[in-house]
Length: 104
Image (tube, rainbow, N blue to C red; front, side, top):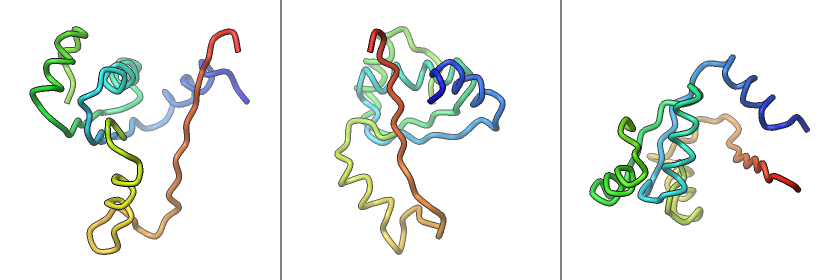
């Protein structure tokens, strides 16, 4: 496994991805995507309670923002996997989590 810094540098060399965050009104979600946006890794689209999101973003001094957020995985996957209106296009669907825990 490569250190997180190496993975970030590799990601910077790739095309920037568009990430849509459902139920984005969460402090940790906004902090994570603001960091990724500042690194030039993603374009973020936030979907959720606009007033709560603006309040949290302003309290964090995040001013320029447009992923699974504060919503249960089962709810988001049901929508994504819906055969009639979901996001499935016949390609592989995967979820990856990377944690960088100092001193671990």
